[in-house]
Image 1 (cartoon, one colour):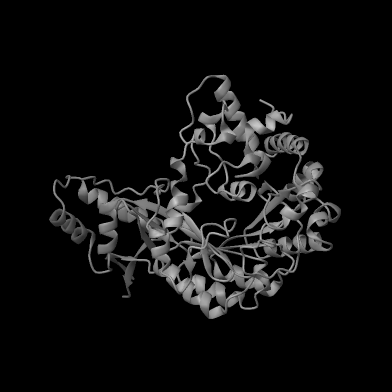
Image 2: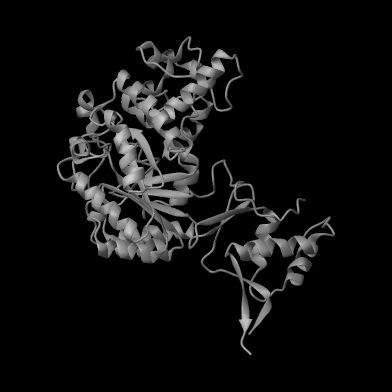
Length: 95
Length: 377
């Protein structure tokens, strides 16, 4: 069984966008809620089970100006946080 | 452009949200008890009529569409609804969590098991007003203590989070120590919350028998502060004597120390609920809060919930109370605590003065002290 590289959103997770472009991600199964900033919201929406972390980084670089060099690390860390919070998972491939 | 992608659980938006985070639903207007201080019954503004299952399910679909996180079912007594499992399924299906406010007496194994299996229950809140039937039943009716305790034990058996609310009145104010021991030690609850009977609904008719006197409030404040310390903060309050004692201590200290006014002081900032939640009456009328039942904002499934939330003139006026300075009120004239005061609950202000945009006279520190009330600093 291999874990694929493309994160997938937990379908039960809820994204509550607020007036100032920040949002709350809420997992009703665990009651966990986290605040995410506008770039995080964009990344969340791009996560589709097909795009890899590298694809997400590329999209940020295309869509935003003045992207810092640490973007790859930051996206990895963000997706890791979401995975640990049960908001994101990875598909697995059966051997 | 800020590229910080870290998540912040404590940075949730404080201003008015695009949609409410939670909605209080009075799922039924029926109750098997007739508590003498009930805020819900005997309110001439309320039409005591229930909606059909389908109406609520359609509404829950709308709430799910707008990403509401929690529905709090109240009443009346929610466990009187035979279709409760179906209603809870509608909430769960729409990716929401729920809580239930109850007297506990109608909870049986079947419904407790169902609630536990949903995995989405934040808590079931049971009202317990004393350490024994004699005290609890004095305002809630014969047999109600036994029902409440049975309900709590069943919920505990099914590992459903139990919240207990103790409402203080003249018949239980001298039973605080026993009540705390019963709830925290005998029943093993992690904590409980407190409030006091307020001049609303049925309590208006029984006010002279039930509402705490100044001396009772003094006993309640002193007792709860001491018990809260003894039980390591396991006694909570967002209103009522314990909350007032904590707030008033800070106000007196600040005033005596000549400290600058509090951030939310000096204006009618007393309730921030309207930025986060809405309520719906049992007959489907949308209201700002269960205790402001006269302020109909629209009707579920007839008016857009989003439109009401974002554009209701009445709701936005309520949200703008924070712009009204306490110096505008004759009631506050000359008060040295104004810079530290929030004006408190608009619903109680309305019930006591007929005006929503008025400070709540019953939560006034100056009035309490004038009437001979003492406060330990």
